[in-house]
Image (cartoon, rainbow, N blue to C red; front, side):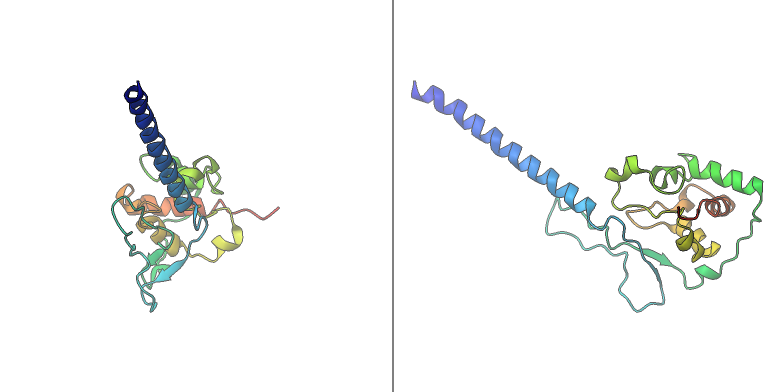
Length: 185
């Protein structure tokens, strides 16, 4: 009689241990993705800092990559790049369509329809996206800087727009994004 009780008890104990390990792993993954939720910095290549896009690998297999230190890597002259596409209602409308289009810009997924962020997707993102409605922040960026950010993205954070949109399309998105900043209420 004793042998018949010990086998189910051993199986039950093993299941409890597996459940605890699974829950612990899941909790660690959520904690890691929530770190540095709103950090975003820009560095030019001429700075004497280490390459901020390199990722330190973890101690072993199954370790989640830390994307929190990934930042913009822009050419030295990115801010001087002039927008060759004139701002017009047609350009802004094209930019909006590209911004919203899933197979093109798909900016809406992270930045939301208004540019203030798509809160429904925040749990799935590695970092909180930039608020494109922040008038003060957006005024500090040139069209060239926005273009390069859209073009190259950030490794592991924001996909490179050059993979889905041609150069002219990316400039239309810049023109649309310029319409998003609002005065603080």
